[in-house]
Length: 331
Image (cartoon, rainbow, N blue to C red; front, top):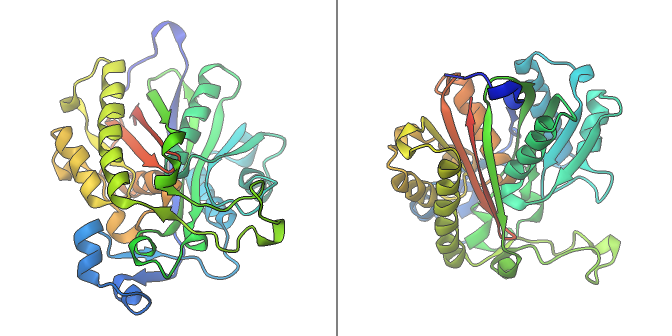
């Protein structure tokens, strides 16, 4: 159960969660009509059965706003309570202003700090860590943390090894200052030297005109290399979180991993000696939603009653950059 903070220390605790998925469903059978693939091929290699896809006119800010509203309702807070908004995304609506600013305006939150964090699939954990630090140092008391993506906008739908992986969605949490333990620690890492293994080779300052910025944008990945690196990096960052808090892996109640590939999720669970019944898995229905995947999975397990107050949760993610990270928290 939750414990009082020593000597009046302030922690950040998750007060509420929320998520949102587009209505459009794209199944493996649908994809088999678009590229040379099959339901069996996709399931056996990734565990994915279907994913959600935005329609024309539906944006990352739309998804993030809807998830934020649900998280705020669950936390019992209003726009007047929000001191800061941090959005993890690699598919912002605009170059600027930030997606966080767009969501801030829709929510009617006045004058709070609002910023985006781009760490690809690790974006939500990076955003959570930023929010946690601001609360711990006493600058703010209530932070809205969102992971939102419209990855379908940067997928090459002719490339069968990548287009089958990704989906769209958003998840959010409200973090509040509390004297009871919540987020115990976060651990973030990056290795930019490996960028060519998982990246989108389109940008603004590297020779593309502004009106060409989205032309040819596509996720490019060397899957086998990414898999090998990800498994090792996640093993290390999971150990780091447990060691930093003097905890044993058998004390964990739930693993909430980035939903990229079922084989990676199973490898991490095996390393932790956790049964798959202790792992929140949504990759079958959501696909890889990048920065949205961890908060989507968290909200799913909170709302269906699996995750209970006082339980110990380990969140982890790995993404392009490379970036990776973990967060250990008492829910």
